[in-house]
Image (cartoon, rainbow, N blue to C red; front, side, top):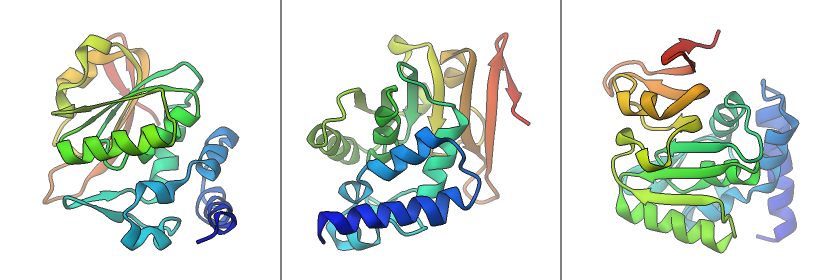
Length: 200
């Protein structure tokens, strides 16, 4: 597909899927417009890169639909220089969006093959402010704590204590919570004096 077509598809994605819903941040909309999502997706489904749905990336994992990435990004109110921990690197796309917004990103992926693939993609696209680690994300990245914000894409049954400890006071966390067999809820919380307070 020609480069111009990708640009047009991204523009349509921003207008039809994001702006038409409730994504208001011009910075987030611009990042979604500029980060080449198709590079984070296997060639077999690349033509679907800007569709309004999750897509398979191998290892029984998926890349979230664009709206979810934009929504979670907007919730932490990203600013240049912010230190963000991401749990569940997947393809590396969410990390790329955060890096595009000027955040310093630390991202952890449980599956080593995906972690390596994401590292390669991010390096190829020159997203230098992303550090990828393979391991159990629910343990966090203690030597780099505290973080200004934490984004979690894999749902635990309850918010892991290590992640609470590693979020700085005043920092935000966006995390889906619930068991695999039941409904999961996306929680948006702010840490105040060591306690997580829901954002209403």
